[in-house]
Length: 77
Image (tube, rainbow, N blue to C red; front, side, top):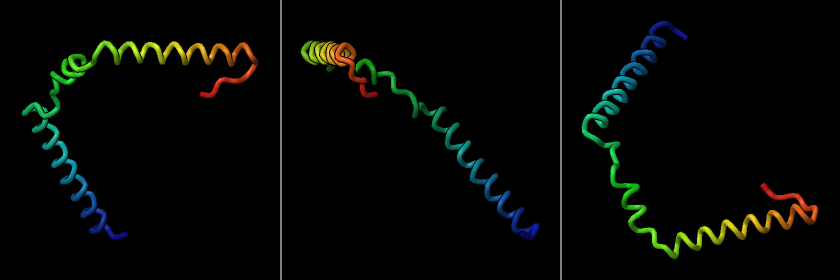
């Protein structure tokens, strides 16, 4: 490779890195990464029935693993 080609590749890489850094700083400054209501809305729309079903499914899963363990089968991972 010639020296001129290497210098051009380094220059383009530095230029693209600077653009990416500026875009990141702009996003941080304007609050593009702030999502304060994400978890609040998630909890707000979870119903008791959905949570109860999730707990029941976890209990069934644990019971099935215990049965497999007691019967000598290996549990899938």
